[in-house]
Length: 312
Image (cartoon, rainbow, N blue to C red):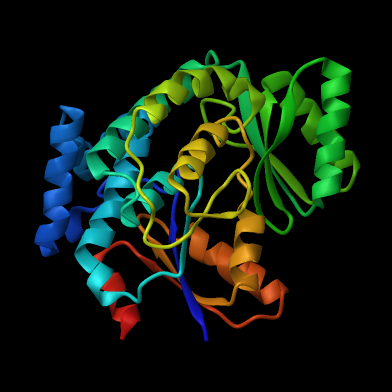
């Protein structure tokens, strides 16, 4: 029997105007916006609707905005979707997944991800760290390029996001990231490019953010989720509340194992994927990875009222 997974996007999927049409169409979505404004003590709803873009792109605003939009989608349309057998979220999206599964309260989550954004931004001075995408290389070759660059520079650079076959993001000290890109090109990497982000997320340079967030996460009430969550840091199906909390702590400096997450879901028989929130990146990654494995799947992105037509 085919199974269902709900997927939740992470940072980079934000855009000015996010959630506006959904809030206008769905009272349940408007209520989420009101809850977000109340929990945060400032109108994130206005920032989502009208920007300015530079302010929305600040990590401390981006993270609660994306969580809010994803929760709006779930509260408005969950009754129109098949219940999930599994859920997963890309980095920040893991919080959205836990809210959707009833494992974490929305107001607790939205306040926490705002602090998470601040902690991650403040862990490394602007300009010290960097991230870059490397396309068309194996995991082993990317790891070797990072190791070579780290040895040459005496600085940190590691794989940070394993997004899909031949799509790996690296992060670390800017000097080491530049050296790793040169090493990757020498190994035949098809394309390598710096990313427009302000901090080296999911690298050991985020350990100060992890230390700052650990006691905050320890203070939150976690419940058993409605279905297993496939977490980022282990790419393992988890239901125990303490394991859910631990995964959020360890994911801050840990790599996002998204390719392994999708492999697990495909191996468990998931054939229907629903990306809930802003953007369409995750659905695209699902389709690409399933195609490489010769599997037939459905992957829909639902974030605005016009997207409902896909449900038939």
